[in-house]
Image 1 (tube, rainbow, N blue to C red):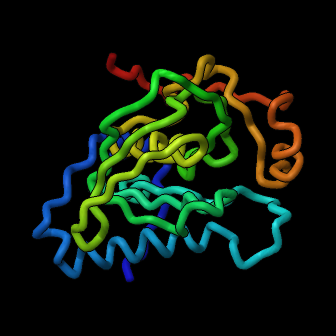
Image 2: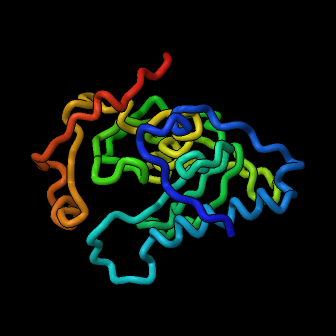
Amino acid sequence: MKKIIRLSPTDKLLRKTCTLVSKNELKTKDFQESVNSLLEFVYSGSYKDTDKVRTKPSTVGLSANQVGISKRISIVDMAVGHASYNDVHVLVNPEIIWRSKTETQRIEGCVNLQNIWGEVRRSYRVKVKALDRSGNELHMDLHGWPAILLQHEIDHLNGILFIDRLKNPKKALLAKNNEYKEFKKLKNSWKKFIDVSKLTKTIPG
């Protein structure tokens, strides 16, 4: 299994649009090993085998370029808090084909921006098409938190970070690991901030 590590928030690869995966590439050993490594990264950070009192954030999503693989692959664990969904999904070349005009707001974080959080507006419902790791076509109609998760990860594949969507990137929320338990309870009234404006970029359109 390939050893992978999260990139720093200033790594240029995070800002590049990832390349599509061809159906021939899906069949290669290298591709499947990359997927296994991404899955291992997500599972190791999910803390599913521990009690439900979280003292640090779980990893519920990961896109390949977050760990140095510039391919359109996202791993999403939509089952966290949503029993109606299956466990971890491997999505290859995911694409949003429709989004609702109705929006919702939720506080988001990122593997590459540890301890940094912020409230982001996104479409409440999206329709996504993708391939699974075997090349089968998937169609997903998602609403609420799973829809937010998919939008977050597909942004990554297009070189966009959640901080680019903050209303005021000079006042992103800062909560270190030893504060995470308290932050989860008080996130809507949290008063510790950090300026991430130098890390943001303008989103086209």
